[in-house]
Structure formats: C-alpha cells, structure tokens
Image 1 (cartoon, rainbow, N blue to C red):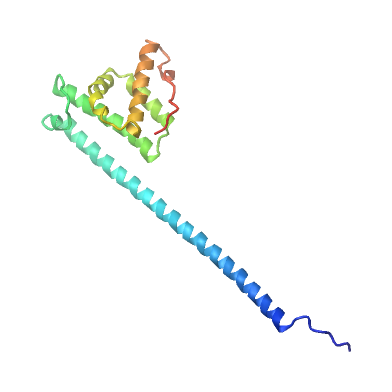
Image 2: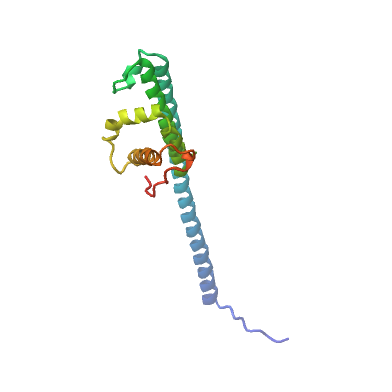
Length: 184
C-alpha cells in the first residue's frame, strides 16, 4: 500500500475555512443590503398608497361639499367667489368645477393618462357653460405657481379652447387640439 502525502496542511485548511467564511459573510451582507432596499421600497409603496387613499378621501369630501352647494342655493355662494346671473347659473358653475376637478383627480391617482385627460377636457371645452365657468375662474388660476400641475392643465384647457375657436364649427371636434409636450 502506498502512503499518500496529505495535501491539506493545517494552514491550508485554515485559509480555505477563512475563504468560505468570507464568502458566506459577503453573501449575507449582499442579502442584508437587498432586504434593506426592499424594505425601503415597501415603505415608499405604502406611503404612495397612503397618499392616494388620502387623495381619494379628500376628493370624496370635496365632491360631497360641491353636491351640497349645488343642491342648496343658500350654500352655493359660500363656495363661489365669482358673480353669477342666477342661482341656477351658480350651480352650473359649481357643477363645471366638479367635472373639471374630477378630471384632474383621475390623472392624479393614475386612473387616467395625460392624453386621456386631454380628451376629457376637449369634451368639456365644447360646453358654452364650461367656457363661461372657465373664463370666470381665470383670476383664480392666475395665483397658481407657473410650474404646478394645475397651472399646466389650465394652459392645456386654454389651448384647447383657442384651438377649438380657431377650428370653427367642425364636425370632427374630437381631433381638435394636440396634447402639449410639457408634463407637470
């Protein structure tokens, strides 16, 4: 029987053990970093969900208040800072505001794209009543920060009205106005 020399010396075994331990620790560290990254991502998702839920609650309350004002002519003047010809006209303005606010809300919570909002606003801009509302609320929009989402959407509506007026009485109104490149 031939005696085999052992290639494994105590120093080599220790080096191999150390290399194995370093590999395990490196793997555990990478796993820990990934876990922490996933936890941060989960926190951000929860924050976004909470914000969206808050927006939904806020919009629901806002629409409830608008509904009350539309239904009760004595409450309507509280929500309105512009003069109107009659309580019916005021209620129409409040309803136009509710439609416009709802359209913006759809964009904010992600159930509508900017292109879909543009199409919805195009429909609203065909209404003479909406246009009266829009003109009477121009001073309100003047106080918006120019770089705000709502100011950007306001410019979109202004452009749609301008494009529709330029197109005249057309049977293909649904293609009037191009979606602006800017994003809010």
